[in-house]
Image (cartoon, rainbow, N blue to C red; front, side, top):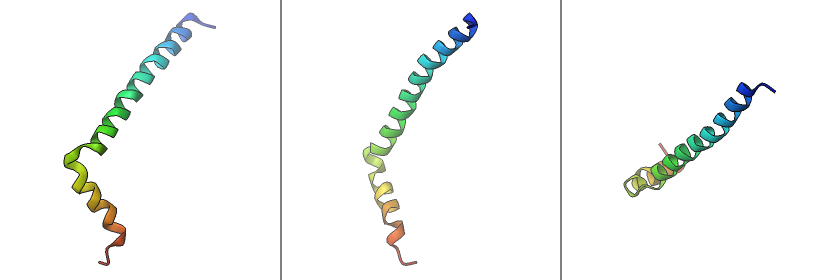
Amino acid sequence: MDPTYQALAAFAQTWGLAYFVVIFSAVVAYALWPSRKQQFEEAARVPLRED
């Protein structure tokens, strides 16, 4: 295999995983942030509304 491909693959695997962990952590923090509780509770009741 081409050494350039191997270097690129290693870079993508390492930093791709780091990118995924950062994005995942940000989404979890957003979802669990205490000030968002009311917003998510209201959104959970949307299907039960009789508008």
